[in-house]
Each structure stands twice: as C-alpha cells, then as structure tokens.
Image 1 (tube, one colour):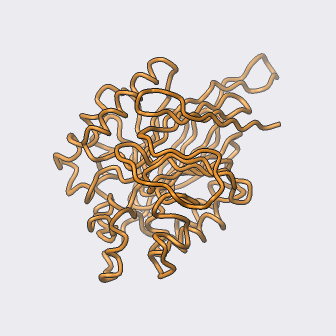
Image 2 (image 1 turned 30 degrees about the horizontal axis):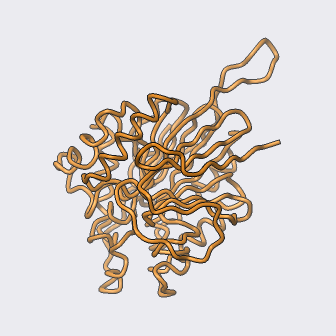
Length: 350
C-alpha cells in the first residue's frame, strides 16, 4: 500500500536561501492522495507529495514446519549527489555494474540530488535520459530515491517545491526509478528502509512526515531498520552538522529542522542513517542515540573534508557504499571509483 501527501504552495524565503545553493532538498505535503506505485519486493508504503501510507514489515521464507523464518541476504548500493551526467557519474556507474555482477545487488539507493542543478521540469525532460537513464543503463536494478535540495530547484536553494512532483511522477514512467512519494518506506526480506524528505524538514513542512514516519518505524517488525535522507546529522564536509549547516545558525538554513526530526523520530529507533549532501565518503565514530551515521555523497563529484567529528573513515575519492545484510550481520564497504574496497565496517546483533 502506498501513501503520500500533496505538495504545498511555493514559499519565498528571500536572498537568505542563496547560501544553500550547494545542496538542499524538499517534497511532500499534508493532504492524502492516491497511491503512486509499489515495490518489487516487500510492501512499499509512502507519504509526502503523492502516495499513501501505512506500515511495512519484513518478509522471508520459513524453514521446516514450525522452524524459524530464514531470510535471504540483502545487498544494495547507497550513494548520493549523482545526477550530473558527467565523467564521474559514468565512472561510478560502471564500477557499480561490475560490483553487482560480481557480488550481487538487490537494488540501488540514491541519497538525493538526483538531477543537478535544478531537478526536472517535467517527466519528459531530457535531463532524465542525460543524468539518470543513460548513465545507469547497464544496471538492471530498481533505484529507490529520496529528494535533495537540487531536486527542489532554485539552483540548490530548494524552494521550488512543486518540482518534486516531477520526480515522483517519473516513477510511473521509468522501469527503474522508484520514488512513490516524497517520503515512504519499504521492506526487503528482514530489512526495512525509511526514506525521508529532509528538505521539507528544513522548512518545517514536515508535520505529516513526522507522524507517518514515527508510526511506521514503531510498527516495523524488521530485524534491520535503516533510515535514508539527503542531509546528514553529522558530517566533516563543508556543509557540516545539522543545526549548523554551512557554519550558520540562521533558521532555516542551519538545518535545525533536520536535527529535530532525526533526534525525535529516527535516532535510537533505527540501526543506521545514510545521507549525502557533502560530496565525500564518511563513517562517523559517534552515533545518534545508538543509530550509526554514514555519509555517501561521492557519486559523481567530490569536495573537501575538514570537520572535527570523530570518524572511523573519511575519503574524498569518488565512490559508493556497498551494503550486505545477512541475518544479524551488516557489512558495509566503501568502494572507490576503481572498485577497490577502501574501508569495511561490520555491525553485529546478538
């Protein structure tokens, strides 16, 4: 079952938002609409701009009669800040294709800024071919996606809110792009992913998202719960930490809305939070109330590091995260553009 919310009217926040043009996303509103689509495995539910909401549990194959449920391993790629149509995007696409052919992938998770610099102008915009379909033509997988600030237009200020609907509607046209609403959740085997609209959090247009996602996370029976969004909670890249993005405390640009949403709805209630926004690869060495934090925004272009958050790993190489969840073990690898494993991190449950 799908769930979504109709988009709000465009708001103007003036020249203050120009500071955000490096990265910010948004979509989704508060009025229920009809469902937009489903997932190829498990149940997809959604909320936000266009869709319908509910809870989604994990699925699996039972063993012998009366025995425990046995789940297949779940393998996927997570990366953000991809949609440039440049040499970097093609390089990473080729490396993902090779990795998935070698080790297997169930899907790809895009972490926002899917279409630089201003999102799509329609479902028929040539940008879809230039910056999504053609670069990833060799990868025959579903690409689940969240919205980034550039997807919301205004040169990255992310205030052209109706633009998000074009990416949502493109789900009906594309064979691989999956965004049934501006926020949603879906299950694969014993893993459930909660897809957030962090740009709407920035602009405090997230009342329905808070209610829906809190209920969905609480209702989930999945062994592993993973939240994904564009904006990070903690990052050592130029954008920095939620509540102090780009070195400002001025609302809404500082991301206090993202900080509040994550601390209230996500942290301590899911196992990992994956984000992009900063164009680097990071696995932080501090959690948010037990929820581990990783940034994977090196899908087409990289920028510098330099923050002071403790980290297990940092890199400005082009690359992506490759996740394998097998039973009670999650293994994450940061893969660089040449296919080399730069870092491996394992989380084990008792």
